[in-house]
Structure formats: structure tokens, C-alpha cells
Length: 269
Image (cartoon, rainbow, N blue to C red; front, side):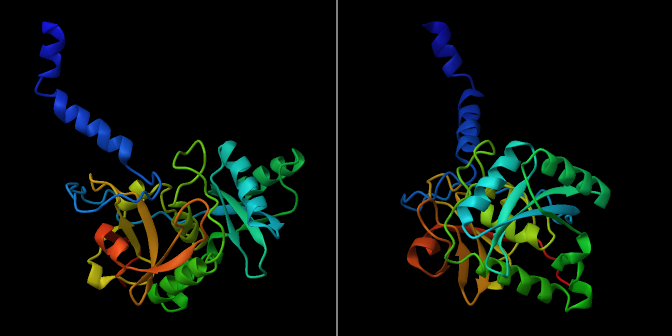
């Protein structure tokens, strides 16, 4: 008994337990409805200020039902290929996956997957097709921000289909934000915690279209939710399973109480 008591009183015991508990609660663990008012979490300075640009990616599928595209994305992700799905201008749902340095490496992977029956027709997306690489000729960062919002709005009304909060079971609520950025050529990290650790902080009264807004619904103040700021005090987000992607006001009491910060990943030029 003395030995057990001595271990529990060790000066490093309590800090260690707090650290483990904080790590377990980080990320999008479901936007639970708990009272706000316990903001004890002090976020570290951003670890990454600039996002890497996407390389060559593979696009496959043309589904009329979002669930079918999400299913293919899950299959590809289970094979070690980062995959996400989106709604095209034609109204069909498609899948993009991979991030290759060369067109040839993307082409070889696409041929392999087609031969194995995982995908059928495919298209290789080149880096120059992304908005981030077209912005210099089309209006700079303002153009890129508008493209991010246009992409995000295309998801409004679409079912939340990114799965749970573990990389082993799919994307969490940050699946929407990651997809929006990747479709425009920026490699945003997968989880809401990683997204919060990237970019640079933005005061709430200086938010611009395309910035990400973060919320906490637990007493530790860790990140539990993320959305894309759409301008005019509104943001677009994936509320959770059983709900559709929608727009909400940052001034709404629920979100105002749980707002913990914002991040921008776009050059100020």
C-alpha cells in the first residue's frame, strides 16, 4: 500500500495524467452538447504556417448518390491512399485520391487500381488545374478565397458522410474542411486538431472568406469542431452524423459561447 501511495503522489503523476487526458480529448470527437465556460486550454503557437500544394491526383467515379462516392473513398483510404469525395458541377459525386510528385506515378497507380477492379474510368488532375496555382493570374488571394467558398457551398444540403474521428474509420467533422482545401490545391491536415495547429491565428473581427473557425464543447477547451468562414458572420460546417452540411451564424449563442479561435492558411498578398 505504501508503494502505491508513493507512486500516486509522485510530482510528475498529475501532470502526466492531465497530458494523457488532453490528448485523448483532442480532435473532433463529435460535437457534443456540453455547457461552455471552462476555457482552460492554452493553444500552442501554430506549427505550420504555409500548407504544401497538392501534386498530381487521381479522379474516379461518377455517382448520383453521395453514399456511393463515400464508400469508394473509404475503400481507397483503407488501402493507404488519402481519398475524399465531392460534388461536381454536373451534380455527380466523384472521388479524388493520392498526392503524387509526377504524372507518370499517378498514371501507374491508376492503371493498377483499374486492373484490380477497384476503379473504372479515371482522370489525372494536374497541379495547374487547382485554384491555388491559378490565383496569380486571376486576382490573387481574393480569387482563391472565393473559390474556397464556392467549393464549400456546393456541399450545403449534402449528408455528413465522413465517418468517425479515427483515421482507421474515416474522417471526422474536419473531413469537409480538408476536402474543400484539397480540391483547391492546398494539402490541409486531416484532423481538426492538426488544422488548428497549422496556419496563423486570425482575430474574430478580421476573418476572411475561407478561413477556418474552431469550437470547443468540452470543459478542457480542446478543439471539437471546425467550419469554413463564408463571410458576413456565417460559416459552413458538417454538424455530425444524421445531419446535412449547412450554414450557421457565428453570433448564434451556441457557437458564440464555444468559439475558441480561427486560422488562415492563405498568403496575405
